[in-house]
Length: 287
Length: 158
View (spheres, each protein chain N blue to C red):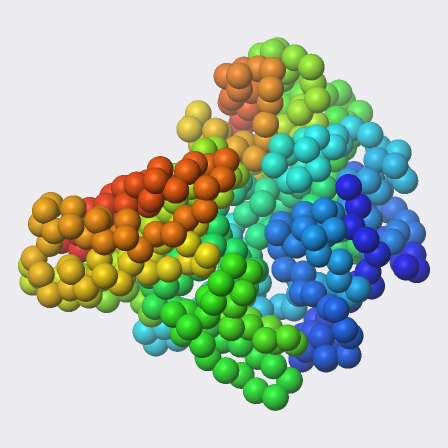
């Protein structure tokens, strides 16, 4: 399979990339390419111009800035997994990246591409919600910061406007007494999640000060199970409360039936993934 | 679209090629440069038969544009053996029966080559994770795991 013809551009700076996007109609950004190129082969996407960001060094790397971890949008999944900063300050990202695709794909796939694509089956969107991340977006006029909570608008639909580039992902470092969990059901290596759930939980003594529960691939976009979170916040979390929260998770799900399962199955699996992640997070927050 | 001139090293040899931007690396390697060791299996970046080494990393060459290899270094299965004979991995795949039909083998070998540089002394579990991007429909994987492990031991002793 061969994509339809396009003109290829390889800028070396974000500003040059923005100029190219402004100059050309029907231009697409190429990051890792493992979503875009397959879509182009199938002619679901037929851009006239491809702006490859792989040569833009300023979009790569992970650094700590006070209490914030700044991750360049073109940082690959393999680089996330290898990052000492993430292992120390936000190991949940490492755990999630390890479960994405396979080694070869993780060498190409980027955190920014995964987020900007707006696919509810991708792993980073729900993770960004659970981490309360901020997304730094640049256009030809300025930078703007969009909270992850306001970024995912629908399937393949995000807050990114035409001609804008997602440049950086900003994640707060884990506070003391914070636990986390990520559980993902997939049929095989390389498949998207049937359902997955990242959870971040902070304890205040024995009670839950804050909790965020993300859900992957069970709605038109990545979502948070806010009713479940509200039930747990301020409470001493028990098995029976986790069961009640799992019911709320199911109520939040609106999956579409496909080869991975029917609506009922996916809804139950989402609850099970969330249940396991809540338990993992609680155990880690207590230790 | 106009063809563009690219240059890269393929198994250590400098290559000049004219490619359309839409041409994928695997097709340029196979059809234009004539090295057909790298296979096209699924053409959707799942099976790993097209795995090559690009700038020191394993990638699936059905999902990388040839133009992205410009100024880079590519290693394919043809680059594994040298004047002294087969690479330790190739011999181990023979000795441990790590293949039957052989279709996945070029991708397996090139991925295993890079994997053993990243992790020279892996456990069975680490091999399974490291080789997870390569599918084999014949062997059931056990002998592939054995072959990679055996090659790791040989390479460590060498």
